[in-house]
Amino acid sequence: MNTRPRHHDVLVIGGGQAGLAAGFYLRRHAIDFTILDAGHTPGGQWPHSWDSLRLFSPAQFSSLPGWPMPPVAGYPDAAHVVDYLTRYEHRYQLPIHRSTRVAAVRRDDDGFLVDTSSGPWTARIVVSATGTWWRPFLPALARGSAYAGAQLHTAEYRKPQDFTGQRVTVVGGGNSGAQIAADLTGHAAEVRWCTLRPPRFLPDDVDGRILFQLANRRYRALQAGQPTPAGIGELGDIVAVEAVRAARDGGHRTAWPMFTSLGTDGPRWADGSAWACDAVVWATGFRPALAHLAPLKLSREHGHPVTDGTRSVDEPRLHLLGYGDWTGPASATLIGVGPAARTMATQIAATLDQ
Image 1 (tube, rainbow, N blue to C red):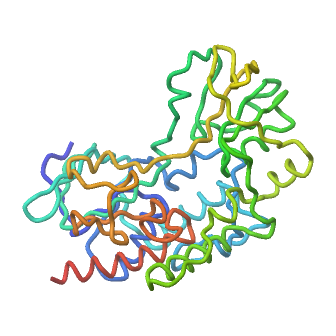
Image 2 (cartoon, rainbow, N blue to C red):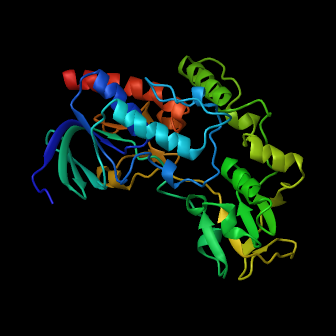
């Protein structure tokens, strides 16, 4: 292992879509940077997604800055996204160090000391772009149960054939829960989709492109101190992609209310009813993967570090990109991360010039 620190003006942690967008704009500013990625192959989290996962937007509205995603019929699947991201990083010759896991980011005399599995690095500025996929969230109901069947999170689900003939409970009223429940239809013997509240489907003509426009409109209004239009959450929770729409219209995806406990054989409800099942899939979301920033002791609000755009309010040499609306409107999406990355790179260039 290399023990002498390697230095760049900027280190980007994470080589997924946010890291690539950051690299695109940092290169435009002729900034000295490199990208550290824990993965062995390109694509960020996309190679680890379930087989039938589809984007919410057509390819032309799912592009990173500079190069449009190649067209494909319908909504792109995960394999198409991985191919696009792989070709994107080669197209722009982005400097990515693979199989480099970042353990800790610490303050140093002239910036940061970054401890990694391939040795130490130093940088004047750090961009954290690790996303959320690597930190799946499981509720206490899952962690503390005596359930004897299989339990897995969205991050571990791959294909419906793994559950052929089984009785499966899917938990979660968002897009992942709806898509996985629909995916299992026709394969599992029976599926119960459990949600905290009745599912709210967005209108069938609303997809990721419209959601991105709404997020931007709301963000601009907030920045200007104007009355804010309805947010995405006020319109609904679930994008009715083709498979979800088919299951919904076929009467296969009526949601059950959330159970109150998980017994050894399956869910149990407050009214005393129970359902024995072979597996529970927890589509209960993710949290930002930020353990590497723990040494910085950043102040937090609403469960995440406080930022002004992408810049940490506690440490102006640190930027966080691609985690959600708190780092830029729709910045956790392919189409949304570009504008946030552009603004961030401009700020970084100004900081380095100082």
